[in-house]
Length: 157
Image (cartoon, rainbow, N blue to C red):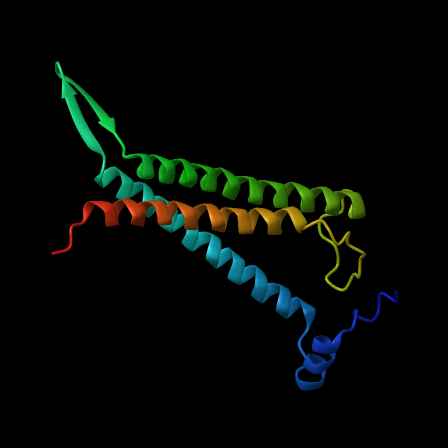
């Protein structure tokens, strides 16, 4: 495969005929969008923890206070905890992988030239993509559990 030409398919040919966009612009837009989704998801996760905290049950026995969660809320809390761990692991992997790759390609040189064209192993970001979708599913299921609990306690007349 010639590295100077992008791989073509029908969609790519149609798009190149109608708009000329640099790959760096597309990549930047994707990175900005996924970063925004991750930021918003983190906000939702912390909000979910707040919602769960509001609906905890306080139990006092002999001047000792303990807290109890409904099963749906406990599951939601666990999923949110897993979400936060996977979120951290996603960015940790991405940082380490790209730092390693840069060091391997350029050694101790500070920064590569912006005009350099380098071959990048196409699977380097595969774990980042997988973790991104996994954490979105974790958060969606956590909120499903929260909504399930709220539905079960709200009595409609």
